[in-house]
Image (tube, rainbow, N blue to C red):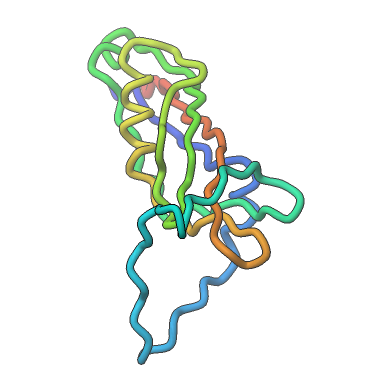
Amino acid sequence: MRLIRLLVVAPVLAASLTAQTQTAAPPDSTPSPPTVPSAANPTPPLRRIGGSVMPPVVLNAPTPQFSEQARAAKIGGSVLVYLEVDTNGAPRHVRVLRGVGMGLDEKAVEAVRQYKFKPATEDGQPVPVAMNVEVNFKVVDHQ
């Protein structure tokens, strides 16, 4: 008897932009290394999505795994996860806002930490943003 199937819901607003094309750098240019914050080059302030701030686009969202405890108890649910996406498109400061327990909260955080994004932008420049992601774990009983 198979009993578990899960579904990951992409971040709100970002899903509508996944069809955007990503422009590649010209072949003769080399990417510049990430900058380290300093007094001359401070970290940009954290932005909220909306207005002139375009949301990050999910490039890769690994499927989270059920915990053994939740699998044995046939427990599912939705975990709401907060994260910040930096100017390189990496998730930072990942934490649970609303959990379901049974080890699923930890599995959701583990999966979200592996997400890859095209960074959020403001006026064409990458900016760090705060956002929430809902990770759904659904129990399916196949008979």
